[in-house]
Length: 374
Ligand code: OSB
Ligand code: MG
Image (cartoon, protein in one colour):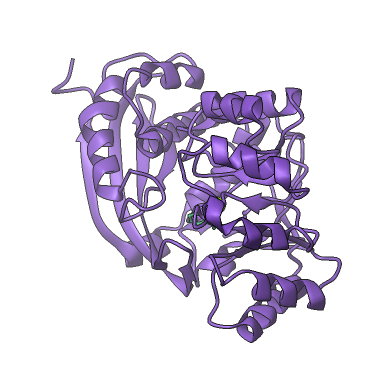
């Protein structure tokens, strides 16, 4: 397949409520859609998940779109791509920039699945037709607000709840939610807000029957995480640390975690994600699908991945209405008895909702891939 054109659509969707983590607060989802058009008119879509500021990883929307335009799209220009697996090695000489790579690579996967008239889920070997999902809840003002919000999500049918924590915004909050929901599948995500000196706080969390504690320590640390994992009965899960299969191997060999939050955007796309899934399965690491507050395109990719059999633990893949009043795809993703349906149409299985997308589009740029580069 040759790609003849790319369209970069910059859009910003307001969130239904601000999302607060130990890094800061997000009020909207600012993103690009990467549309690749093949020689025979097939359109593949990817969503660029970098955030406006480099707090979660080094990439920002501005740096990532620059990498897409200056380095990744030129590699696709005038080059025949035979399988989507070729894209990851094609981008391999470029260091880092996983989110930029993922946005383009995932658009290629979508295009190939559409050409084969198969759903992306089926194409990557997924068999589930619906997936149980969880919800990630941001830091709240006080314990009462948190307990009430969790109650709302539980009523809506979410099967697993993740609570953001930070030092001293932890024990009280977790304790209150656990007391109100003794049997809820519950976990905590620190977004790297702790260090070894905070051990007593983390040790206290060990008594609340949490599914896991996600990314307590620094985003490049494997050694202190291993030290902590040896001291806790609760599983440690790594998120920010995991940018490639090599990172997962390192974490596993050192004993830094027992679970991996897998995000397509953070590991550079589908090919790397599938390798990580296999490694986790072979080495008894729990792997589950994380989220980046995706709009509809990114969410569709996540759902295809999480439809594989290895994903037994509900992902951070909530329904569209948990994030936005309206989503940019049709149909939007709806929660049905705690589950999301896996689209069956070709490719990602949803189409751009142009009415909604236009309302929130900030700019559009078209780049021809058959001229100007060799
Ligand atoms: O740490 O998992 C995280 C959102 C943005 C950046 C990092 C994280 C998150 C979430 C939200 O927890 C997950 C979702 O998309 O629902
Ligand atoms: Mg996380």
